[in-house]
Image (cartoon, rainbow, N blue to C red; front, side, top):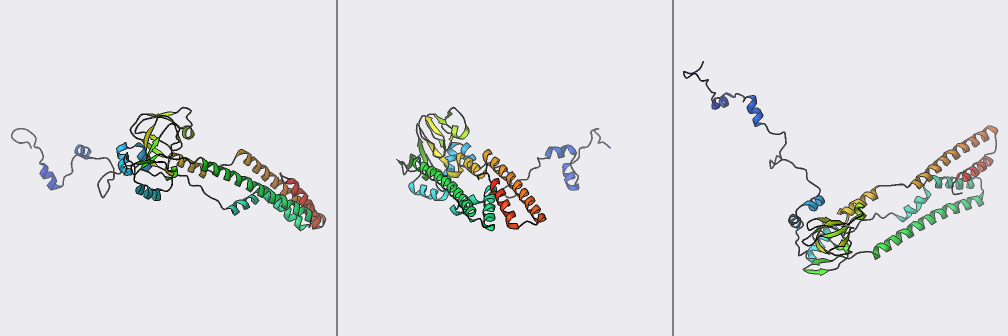
Length: 322
């Protein structure tokens, strides 16, 4: 039924609420919101957070200074010492191995196993000259390899000590030249022509500089960097002079993360793979032939010592370094 004026009667919204009537489909679609789960404490929607170092690399310079609690005037010596304790020195951490375990490692492997088996067989058949000669060769090979690798490591360490770079940094309002390993996030440094950038940093106000990043990115030509942009540890200043705010040191730098990935990757050279493959084939062949010899000897009733002599000769002949 319609009212006297002939117009349809509109429903009363208050009546719909009181009676519990559901809104129509159009209203439901209009009021719908995306299916997201807000934070139960703040009601804000969760957002993906970048890594802290990436954040400092891309944030506006003013916000970086605020986060690092620093300014173009640098840090105090007391604050720098406190941060050095917190973040650690600005250097890559090298894993030191036990020298004894490293030396014993030269007695472990397919080829050393074959030599050790030859030593044991020589002792069993009481061929003492062969026993001592093969044992001497085994020990000499391990000592020479261990000594050469240790000498190479010592020379690299000495070279690194000579090449330890200094950094121009402002502390307590004065420019000083401490070792680069003493830099901390928040330090203000000065970069000049020919300098190796000692840590990841954001360039402060000044003219643009030319940076050689070939050691990091493989780029053949220097890249131009302006105020506010990032420069990475290990790159070289080819042109210009500018101040910079350090935001990452040590293993947190771009270079440090790359070095950690390289150390974690246990790579074996093609030559090592070839030698190991040949050694494995020789071991399988020697074991098969020794088993055949022992089988025939048992079948024919030969003396075990004579059989072991043949096995010894075969084992020594199968050693690649023999």
